[in-house]
Structures are given as C-alpha cells and as structure tokens.
Image 1 (cartoon, rainbow, N blue to C red):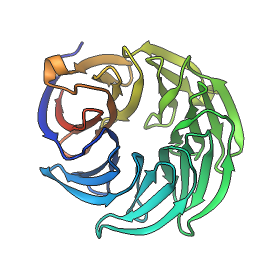
Image 2: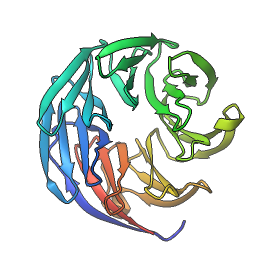
Image 3: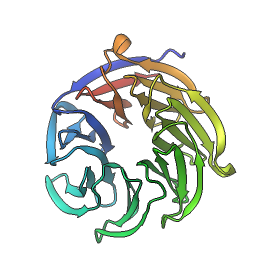
Length: 302
C-alpha cells in the first residue's frame, strides 16, 4: 500500500443515536448529518466542535440531500415522507407524505427529486410544486441507493434483491441485472461518467462499464463486511469506501488499488459500523459517520 498520511482532526459528538447519513452544502466547509435520533445538524469544519440543530424529526433520518439550485436541504423522514428545510433559517419550507416505509436515499436532477424507499418504490417528485410525478416498483425488496448519470440523466438504483436497475428520467426501465450476491447499499458513477461503482452487503466492490451495456469491468473483495458508501476525492483521483467492518479504505481510482486502511487500531477510528463518508473540498478533509454516534474528521495527505 502507498504511504499516505492520515491525521484524525476531530471527533464530533451531539447525536444520541447512530449517525446514518451526511450531506454536502453549498459551502466547502459546511455539511449536514442525520441520525436515528431524528436530529438534522449542520457542522462547520472551520469551527467543528459546535454543531447547529436544523430540525428535530420524530423518526430516524437515513437520507439527506442538499438541493443546490434552491439551497434547500431535503430530509427523508422514515415512515412518513420528505421535509424541505430552509436550513439557514431553521424552518420547514414544505413537506410531502410519501410512504410508510423507510427512506434510504434522495437524489435530484434540476427540479426533479428521486426517493428510494424500503418497499421497493422509487418516487419522482417535482420539488417546485411538491407533487409526485411518477413511481416505479420494480421490486418488492428495498430500493437502497440512487445515482444519477452526470450527463445523460439516467437514474440508477441499487436494491436489496441484489439487482441494479437503470431508468430514464421518467422512471421507465431501460436495463437491469443481478449485480451482487446480496443487498446493494451504495452505487456511484465515477466523475467522468464512464463507470458505475457498486458496493454490497457481500463486501464486494464492483465496477460496471457504462458505455458497454454495463458489463462488469472489475471486482474487488474490498471489506470484511457490507460496504455502506463510496465517495470521491476533490481531485477525482481517489475514492473512499466505508463498511460495517468499522473501517474506511482509501483507493486509487484509475488502478482500483488500496492505499490506506483507516480503523480503530491504527488511527483511533470508529468502534462500530461506518455508515457514510464525505470527502470535502475543505482542506481535503474526509468526514465519516458511524453507528457509534460520532462523526470523525480526517486529513488525508498524499
């Protein structure tokens, strides 16, 4: 493995339950967290010790998404729907009841918002009118993760039935295949849009060739247990994975080569599952969220 330096900068506390999700904002130094305690919190990396409560919802928050055009923060409120938060003023701009299931992911493309739910439904919403445009339920198993192609707008969804499904912008199914041997927890397009990366409960990281009918281009047994999330470095040359095995791993993107393992023994890492990662533009700092109720902030120095 390549010699890169990892420095733990901060441990952020304040949530009273597992921290499930992180989301960017319009500012490099600011990000959001959501947790099992229903709290949505804003954190400032230039003053990281003092989180600011944005909203307190009755149920767990598994999904947060910053909608850049409106600067609203969308929160998935399990067993209810989504809340549109004016986070600067700590007010709710709108809400929409959607489901009695869990909400696992929220992504957007311009005014269109896509929501993945625990009953296998993917819902397309017009944010400006807060209306449901269409739905698809291609599986009875959970829709866990959504990625949107950076140029053609394809909507790709990973499911707990082990399938990845590709939809057009109106949620018409274009392509589907069994991608893993277990639930798919994370999918991300590479920054150039040429490949799709997927991580699963089967601990495997797979790469799919977008321009060649999504045929498999690579596979790595990346972790000991489920891969929960993937994020890319600001320079688009590296990526990070996080896992139920309590570790984060830093990789070189073009070679799919492991560079560094960040764990409790070597770097005072998390004590339980690492659920989400965010590689920020603020001093190249990496943020990770865990079932141990904490958020860690890391410097990755190449």
